[in-house]
Image (tube, rainbow, N blue to C red; front, side, top):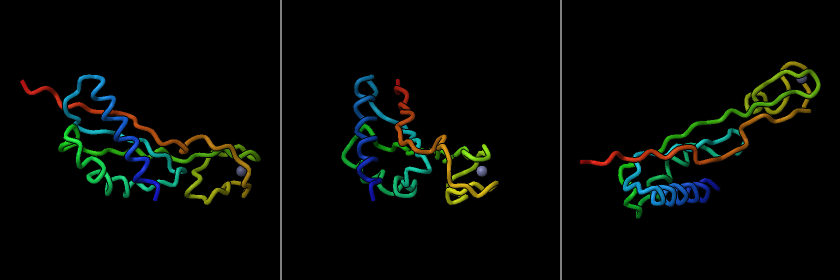
Length: 118
Ligand SMILES: [Zn+2]
């Protein structure tokens, strides 16, 4: 259950970035979650209200998550495949030797500001 601590870091970073840029309220934040990080988006959605509870800048803010697919390139036959769906085994030749191409990152991708109400 590491989701809550990484989510907390992302929320703190978003808050600081918003303050630095003169943003009064955040409309949404977008997280990019790699499939291979082992983080489950369902927990981010669950903890988001908890983590942002005492932060007025996040009032009514929405959490958006983009899942980055865990792709690999087989070192033996050069097929590209999804690591999760194939349990890390090349569906073309059965090899486990591979280069991971994506899906290992967790990052704060975007911060949406609430437009000034004038
Ligand atoms: Zn292969």
